[in-house]
Image (cartoon, rainbow, N blue to C red; front, side):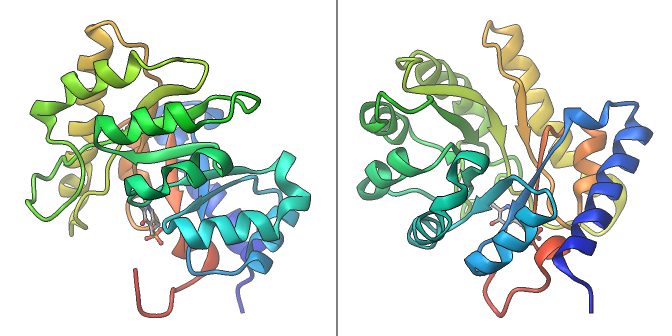
Length: 234
Ligand SMILES: *Cc1c(COP(=O)(O)O)cnc(C)c1O
């Protein structure tokens, strides 16, 4: 049976190979281990194998795991990658290091207000709906510049806008997998030409991390390839 440690090594090798093909240094990509639905023991196992950055989708589940792993807190980076409602912003501002799914100014404002001053600033990414489906969360590319400039103007001691994230639809062939990642990179390049200094593209998961790295991903969010299949829910 494959262990988390073996899976981590295999995933790290995939990241390294994709970086080599893209002519990018391997340190330019951070592997975020998505531990949603898996217990604190699985995170401990990944930690023992050298993994330090973990992603959680659900606020309550993430908070419980952060509490259960309080002994490792100084060594770990916790990223919220799922949706965030305004009634949960305070708990998130107090516990996490990164929030990837920001798609409204109000959420970013609350996080900036509620981030305790003794903690490092919360690192933010704006979620962009690059595939344009009505059902998906994320800001439309047309509305992105206004949101990005407003979030970048919030007090930098509390929150820092780092970049963009997306969750594109799964695609069958290699070219179709690259298209939404290219679109997100182009959004980031436009914002940077507009004067924002953004350095983060959070894109690519277990099935498409190679395509994402080819298009410039700096954080790949990988769940199943590290922890195994999740029971039922995504
Ligand atoms: C679950 C999830 C992932 C990881 O997906 P895998 O297919 O398990 O690698 C990445 N990003 C988000 C936002 C997710 O919800």
